[in-house]
Image 1 (cartoon, rainbow, N blue to C red):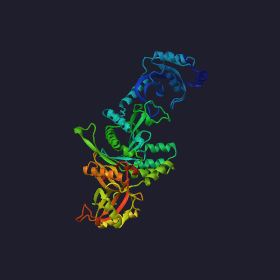
Image 2: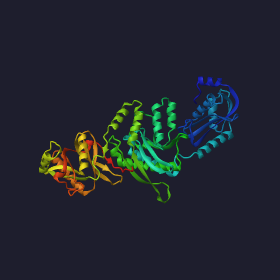
Image 3: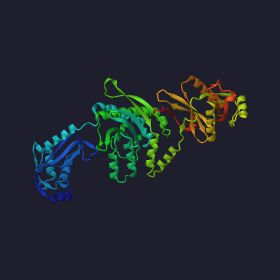
Image 4: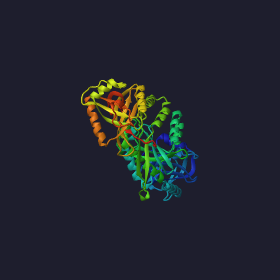
Length: 537
């Protein structure tokens, strides 16, 4: 049998011996909160109480396979470091309800003047354990039973989407719900595989601002607890703390999803009620669909303006009810949050902010509204005639191969045509013409977006062409073939006569400008898939 060391024996011998009877027992409980508020243990509870004063002197939760030494450790704690207001002391008598524990304790404490007895029942200990069991029984489950499996499945589905691989903390997504007392949830994805769903934009901004000024751990903890959000985080199953491990590269089987809530008046709560579980479930479904659809655009490193609507079934609702959720990116908020973070002096954040602020913006106010647009070819003899006779001409090193020059024709009224030409010249001229893929609000809406790049770096939308339009498909096919023959050269023709007899087929005298420019590929502009949104959005 393991015995106490001489130094421990002397310490206990020096303790004041009180005329109290202590009761001790070890019981299996389904679950009990440990002394650390943020964790819980499941196993055997060891309890030592002062039967005279009626106070708990020590309590611990140990693994079911822990040996009788665990009982001794808890008893030593009860003697030397009991919770206030109890004082360190050595009891006169100890009573247990287990013969094996009695004999074991006699062997350990045989020379300390402590009487160790057996009793079949310990009323005070039994009462305390009943109270603990009642507390455990009334504790709400972390997730409502009917939502537990759907939420866990949705969490693992989102794990496969891995938004933390291509979204930064400042790249916030807005989920407009307008139900259950909520207007919009603002989603921030953290690198540590955590997703925060803020109930208000003010809470998100205030937290970021406090992070920029808080210095002490106490201030940071207070700022953390003052957030107003729901959350999903993935915790390591084996609770391994290894700074060298990239958690995002580990399989989902090594993690378990944890849901909860943060509120300034409530603090951290690691369980959800039915309504909160419903909100998170529909929000995660909408978030998953949005990320799955726009992942390629978000992986480009840009944070473009994207928006989509999804009809999500409401779980556990009667009559198959559903809700429409609009999900959209918030590029302007991303810049604002970066400005807050850059105040900390983080060089990487400053560089990223500079990149965003100087990123080209696609404008749609250059080409006059209701202009007639056509994509075609101009024979070389007409090109030659225009070069010598037109007032506004921008030349290029065009190879005169093939049937003629591939051109985009913009026909509008004469005043608007002159304004368009002047704006192009003020921008240093036209630099290139590009067709870039675009995505509309509907799931099946795809577009070929015509873009003019001016010499000052500006990008201007001149046309939206349906990707499935057979007329445009044939025109684009011929455009690409002709540009290949001209070694990448094409042209823009600006013409008047929109309201006259030559509408849709401008004559030579209607053509006011010819710009010979390069035909650009979508990769040249690095815009990725662009999202078309209505003015209401």
